[in-house]
Length: 508
Ligand SMILES: Cc1cc2nc3c(=O)[nH]c(=O)nc-3n(C[C@H](O)[C@H](O)[C@H](O)COP(=O)(O)OP(=O)(O)OC[C@H]3O[C@@H](n4cnc5c(N)ncnc54)[C@H](O)[C@@H]3O)c2cc1C
Image (cartoon, rainbow, N blue to C red; front, side):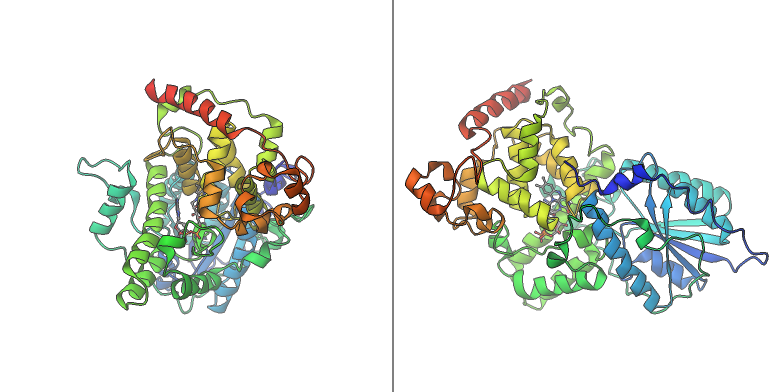
């Protein structure tokens, strides 16, 4: 079962729109500056756009749905988000005199052709940190420079560049706490830049596609129909989210952030993933609120440390370009994962494992496009340690179904749970889905929301419905094996099996 938003790549291979573009007009247009938007779909604090705007030249703004063979196609939920984010960017660029041109195809080919056809003499983009993306950018940069085009990459996604945060031996940190301490002790992040008030747009390109023609939205079936109930997409929505969070929820974040039904976290992750807001804007907004005594220092630090985990994940990715496919700790290469049993995997994906907190998380993911962080850890541990399925299988599922699916944070977090990652959970940490449920969802409010067939079960049994007596099952309207599944694996058995397997590896 897959969302397969990206099957469009395979069913209708397109000619690059650049191939069918009309021939250039006779009089060469004025040279313009190109801004290639990627994971930075905003106007504020956008160094690439600000620099191009300052050049005084007409600015050509583009987005490419990249189909380069070396790049990982976006997952279905990310494509849904991207569609709406591009609409928002198109509108905000329009409001300052700009225009967004969209393309679909091989980005090296498209940018290279555009530069020639539209008479572009300088190119700007925000840096990316995955190995394959960096290779694309490096090749393109070398090619354009050789043709006399100025190319400048900018920091549009991070507080600090990964190569700026190194330990005393000039090596990357492998543990989060010293990494984040070094970030905080080093130079302050650059101050956010204002959005340009006006840009002069370059001429339209008849070879460009409309956002709708990018076919990013699911249709048959439209599994994202309800996403709008949970999300407002785009830069101004992101800014509003941040303001609401600082005003209403940041106080108490440190204690409530682990409670999935408390709505105590920022829900900024998809906005950050698509760069609708920058971490610098978040960092300084929180600092200002703290300095004005509007929020407690402890909660502010705890929240900023989570932004720090994002930075750490990017640093790990930068120094380990294959983080999403290769174990960070190479001895895990010898680990013998189970061949995923289709029925187990499907039960996990659909939220029918028989463990209510696990099922609630996976159903939250399916219906909203995100999952609470605590529950992400529980469901990931369940897949890896209870079902002994390779972390990469879970990473791929999240990649397809999360609106915030992120090259760095997803891979780093899955490896953290598996124990194969940096600063990872020790092998003997096997989340007990019953205790986790009782601790972080004591009244069962989260479970009842996403697993409505357990609505009638009392709090003391909601995380272990198999312990209900026949009379209690009847009165709560639950028929195990029919309305709600029996556990697909016994917790005690699974725990011992995983302990033995992971302990053997840790001793090898
Ligand atoms: C198995 C697993 C997979 C994950 N996959 C992703 C992913 O694809 N994309 C993603 O953005 N996060 C991922 N996370 C991290 C985390 O779960 C989400 O960032 C968080 O739930 C988003 O909710 P929020 O914005 O309300 O977070 P908040 O608690 O409000 O945190 C603020 C921001 O800090 C960052 N952040 C918080 N926790 C982490 C973390 N552990 N690692 C890295 N950054 C963090 C996010 O950008 C988040 O928006 C994953 C965690 C696990 C355990």
